[in-house]
Amino acid sequence: MSEEAVQAAEAPEETVAAPAQEKIETPPAAPVEEAPVSTEDVSYQAVEKEGTVTAIWEMQGQRHLRTIDPRSNEGKQILALFETAG
Image 1 (tube, rainbow, N blue to C red):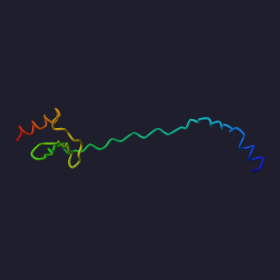
Image 2: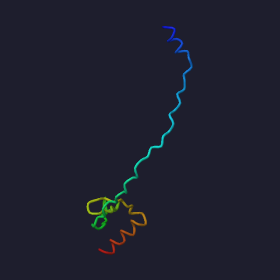
Image 3: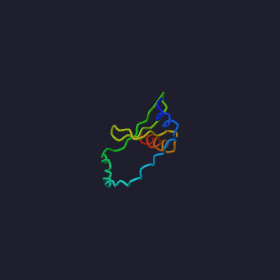
């Protein structure tokens, strides 16, 4: 090994100063556009297994919005509305 390589290996590592942080100007963000409101009504579908309602699907057209537990207060209210309507 050359003497320069040995000295370089034995020399303490120099710390490199981090560059000063620069403020980067960004253009203002464009306003967020809201999704168009669908004109389709919300409907509910009961999911049954062996004659027992296991879930209630809240639908808007063919789009699934959320699943409601039939044992929850909201689920019980929805089922009660359908039982009295039929």
